[in-house]
Image (cartoon, rainbow, N blue to C red):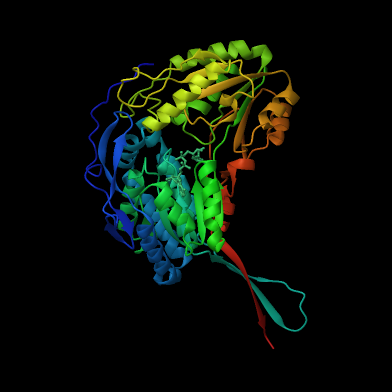
Length: 496
Ligand code: NAD
């Protein structure tokens, strides 16, 4: 599992100099002139700079989005918007190798992952293109006296503010721009300060594809100023936020000024249940990669692996052996399976949890180290397995957002479900079993927005996913997502 050296993939020309914000169709510096260094997490070295936008820039972007919403964009037909989305689809896919490389350099995920997102990107864009008729009108029956015609409209909500995290901007931006373009809304997106580059490059491609000025805007900057300003802005009608619970609570408070609609996709501590009748040849790598994919920086990661006691030791041994086969290193190496964590801060956070896990009595069965030692460049952590843990330990309760699995034994289904649901989160869960009955019973009983059976993490944008409890509200993907960008309106017409 050695950390590997960079290979010589050429750095795209885009990853250089000072990147600007996209406001009203123009690329502009932050009004303050301030910038943020972009750090390559595989080397710890700067790549380029992004604008440090703040409330002034957000205000300009929201004004541009409002003008576009009220202006020519409102006259675009569904068919025109669909053609635009399909054009964006084609141009983005044509540039996908470059986009994958930018994402790998910017946030560390290996090329094997970022390049692998091409087909999913095609799916998500085609899905939203298929939803362009969602802003529709229909006649409705009524029981009114006289001769009254009733119409029901679904109308675009207006200006949408998007705030996304760093763990997968190449995915996260489509959950904002896709439904906005499909419904005729406009958007201001604030990507994460640690990973904005792929969003900026895609915004360039979208303008090339013909997105009108002001329909999409991107303001980079820190959450506490640019993000907060967007959440507070009284001319933003809806905020679509993906990130941590603490930030979500701040956003809920910030949104009260104009009671803006919210969609919140937050964290998790998802249980992945492995029953004794599971096929361990599938369950071991499946549950392991359910935690370690993207170096554990995945909201739905199945980080609490609940294993039936009779197979606990065998499972842990096989999982630990499996982790030794995972290739961790610079994402530019095509053989790398796991890249670095996003930042020094995240590295310290993950190493802290690993210390706490050992301190609270979980057995460190594998991993647990920073790769290359404390002075190594880049933010690499070994895939780590804690076994024999209990659900009250910190590593079973808090989201670590790193490659750390906590294996907890259980006796029977009731016991497993009690542990599975003993969490404030409700994002996802999994079950590995050979029994159809167990699969159905468990998937019904887990209190979470998504449950996987004998697989983990697959996602069809037309089906979607979402959270319950403190993992947020609002569905991503499917018709429900699009409807969140619309509001219903009834019209009563007296025909006499
Ligand atoms: P974060 O909440 O710190 O940051 C997310 C975004 O919010 C960033 O763009 C950040 O700049 C911005 N932000 C920070 N403070 C803000 C404020 N006061 N007002 C407005 N915006 C602000 O989260 P993170 O650490 O970047 O990401 C990791 C978290 O995201 C994890 O909890 C993870 O589970 C979650 N996540 C959830 C999903 C999902 O779909 N459920 C997907 C990916 C990540």
